[in-house]
Length: 208
Image (cartoon, rainbow, N blue to C red):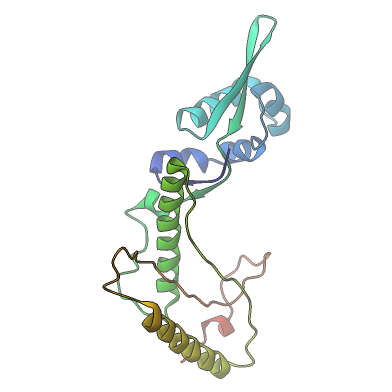
């Protein structure tokens, strides 16, 4: 089983995002069958089998074994990955474009960059899995509490200058055999786990 599978096909995404089938994928991180899943999901075995066939036909679950039980054969299935990520590539017509109106102070542009990050790293993971290799990546995640919008603005200016200096030091346009790497640095207000509402006025203050 893969650790994470990236879904880039719109048809597969539609199947995986169905609420019932999403629950089934979560349950099938461990092998299971229609017989074992039916009571867990509160569905009939026939209904579960219908959903399992859809998941299998789209490559989201795979057959682990077949068990003979009297006059019937029980098919034991398992999800092909422990987690699934839907790439913006699956919704190409709706995906935000980071090359459109780039503005480093725009939340929309940050979102577009995030969408591209999911798409590109997803493609790298898929290719690396097929080749039996690992993807060379690096990420930093942290939280900082600013005393005021002014301090936040000072931080962003210093961060931008520091990153620009590092890029200038290490970038070699003419390096033979060199490989380009994309760098994304983002900053946004922390969202509480239980907070599903829009940002507060503080979130929308202009950091300039």
